[in-house]
Image 1: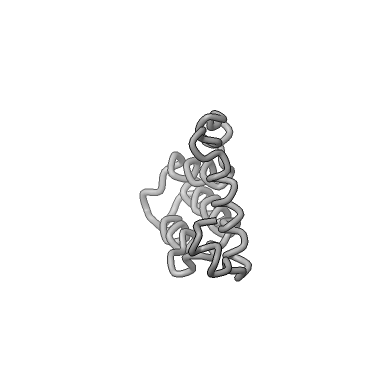
Image 2: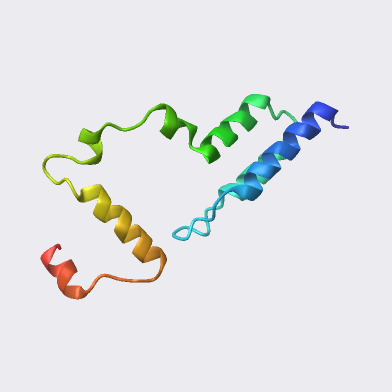
Length: 105
């Protein structure tokens, strides 16, 4: 029988799993499913729950922001902006025209 502390941890991790965003590119890899099964583990620790919450909230991104030199490299300053734009369009089902692919635009 689970203790109250273990039950509370299990509920917290289940809550994190329920709030986790869906991945449109890899729907077969489901992190929420893994977190749900982890919430039923008998040796679930508070550190594991805190780590999952930190990942969901993006705390490492806030704690360790990337410098501008990494986000906009001198050799190709628009690289990451174009990459993010391409991912958003791809998630919506919008593909690139053949001539942009051919010429690398």
